[in-house]
Amino acid sequence: METTSRVGAQGAVPGAASASGADAPGGPLAARRTVDGYLRASFPWYGLDEAFTGPRWLMQVGTSADGTVQHGSIGHGDEPSIRPDRLDPTGAEKERFAAVVTVAASPVRRSGDGTGVLDATSVSSAAWLAGSGLLAYTWPPQLDHSLRDDWLDQQTEAAFELADDLGGPEWSMLSLPVDGAPTPFHYRESEYGWVLAGSTPEGVHLGAYGRGMSAYGLAFAVVRDITAYA
Image 1 (cartoon, helix red, strand yellow):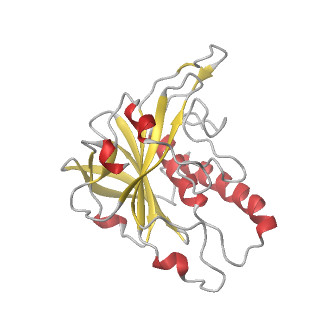
Image 2 (cartoon, rainbow, N blue to C red; image 1 turned 60 degrees about the vertical axis):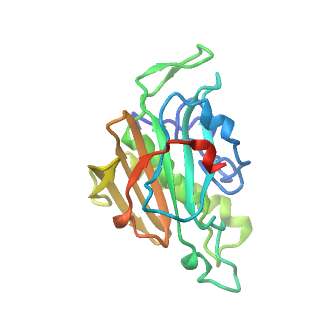
Image 3 (cartoon, rainbow, N blue to C red; image 1 turned 30 degrees about the vertical axis):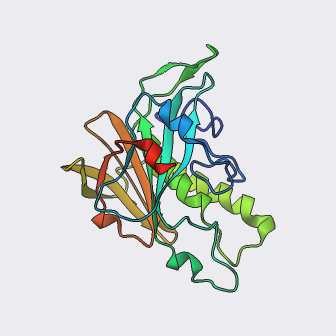
């Protein structure tokens, strides 16, 4: 992908996820970042607008080698489990959550350590982060634990390829409000949930993923006080 690299979950360019999912963006196995990481960002954070009245919670920020914050995720609704309980295969279907991923818009640039060149970020970057974020919470109940890494590798590669082909048949277009203005998003559904990605007038890229909540009724807005999410 010309706009997204997979060089490490906390690598210099958004879009990296480890094979185990432990460092997937917003993944349940990753350590929660404190609000301090969000406060260091040079770009505005986005979440669902005030029409959503449920719980909101910080997930994870991604930084470059020099510590620059490049992306992060904010959760809304139920904090999802990694997979439904084997005794209750419908567990995942009962969860209602949406995660909003904000990605700083960046041109092609040199890495913080000066050893290479980092790709530009784009809507594809947001789509990749959202797609891999959804996978981090997905584990089919019939899948043996020992096989999860192989399954996650395969699904993650598929998500990467889909993010690199936003004009492909897997995606449709959806208009949703961003700070009150209709904004086009790329949208797709899977058996695990939905993913969407677009850009904002404020110059950042937005991704989102979730399940149990309809994407068609969402609206996004700048987070005025990120400390309220902590």
